[in-house]
Amino acid sequence: MARRILVVDDNVESVKLIGLMLESRGYEIVAAVSGAQALSKALSDEPDLIILDVMMPDMDGYEVCRRLRADPNTASLPVIMLTARTQISDKVAGFQAGVDDYLTKPIHPEELASRVAAVLQRTTNSDATIPSRRAKVIGFVGAKGGVGTTSVAINVGASLVTGQARDKRAVLAEMRSGLAAAGLFLGLRTDIGLSELLRRPLENTDGEAIDSQLQGHRSGLFVLCGQVEPPGV
Image (cartoon, rainbow, N blue to C red; front, side):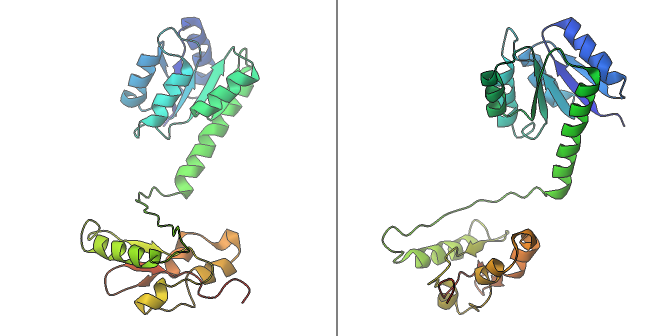
């Protein structure tokens, strides 16, 4: 199935020209001539990529991109900004708004096609290798040497697994590389967990490796124990 590209430009001739360049490479083209129309078609037409102009009368391309990134339905949609604005400040503004690539007009058909292919490939690889996992994180920081912080974190974790998170997995990760106490308090092994992960090369520390260091507690809480001994001891 052909990849679908939404081309957004208030200049109809530009839309036609870009569309012809990409249709000749086998892409399906959808057009929008305003920012509002682009946001609507990004949802209704489900494009694989958007090529976006900056200067439009109702809403500039930066704002369109910001709104795309703010909507969970379009947040990961790749965007290439293609515009006549060539200043470094314009490019910086584009990347700050969330574009994946920034191209300037006029552009050669071969360069446009290669940039489109590269962004699509990069996005496809990212989607394939990084599973979508949602989680809520609660952090605890001891302001006075950590006195009582571990107890508070354990109690909150225990209350979550019997309340709001009873149908989910709750993990207490103790990120202390020395003088950690959660494992001792809960009667768990302290020779695995963070200390074991820190011995591994960074490239071998993935989600599976972290899961292997979790210990289940009878409360239902999973624990990644910190290091009891300071590093190097």
